[in-house]
Amino acid sequence: MRIQYNFAFLDEGSKREIRRATLKAIAIPGYQVPFASRELPIGRGWGTGGMQLTLSLIGKKDMLKVIDQGSDESVNAVSIKKLIHRTTGVPAVDDTADATLIQSRHRVPEVPLASGQILVLQVPMPEPLRMYESSELETKRLHGEKDYSGAWLMLFEQIMKYRTVSTGADHPVMVHDRYVMAPSPIPKFDNPKMNSSEALILLGAGREKKIYAVPPYTQVVSLAFDDVPFEPESFPDKRCRQCGAADVFMDELYDRDADETYYQCNDTSYCLARMNQQPS
Image (cartoon, rainbow, N blue to C red; front, side, top):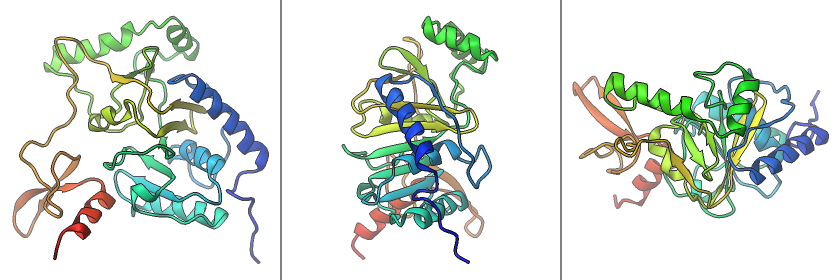
């Protein structure tokens, strides 16, 4: 017996409620908007916030792309694509430029996003102040008063201990010179891509029941001191072994047969596109 689902799985009332929260988030860049997170057929913490945003916004004319840690073919990415395709019929694509709706876990694509595209980021912990303040009421007060001394102190302690800022991912950013925001656990390499992006960036945390957004052409600045500037990951003099790309975020891998370390593009579709463009 074939089970019939509503278009995009969620009921229409749920989608309307999530869209209203999304509109408020867009109107107040960086502000965390609470919403009634729905149950989905995957465990909380595996991207339910991003999925709810995608399922609420997707239309029959959209082209969907889902990536997980840079890969289009990971278990999480494939499972999400299957659910969305089976309940909408919307085709999934690998080429970032062809996609109108991109759901991602922990990466911003290497190909610059364009006007009209929507990037949905899955977020496990949306509150950037949670590391030093456990009270939700207190974090709301701190955001309201724009009191981010704790965030600056956290960075200062890292510099005193390690002589550098030790955040590897989810480095906090200031949005529109107003709210400090957690950019999801994307590497620091991707933080500058959020600044003045032509695409709409939405961030959803299902377990924490929060939605927030970075509208197109919004100023996003990574927190840093004047004398210790923000430094994203870099791969000097390194090139992808497969496509030869440089100045992209790479994975460091080990070839047992050759007994050597090599580098490869983390964004698999970007790497494959470059390989296909090269003459054989």
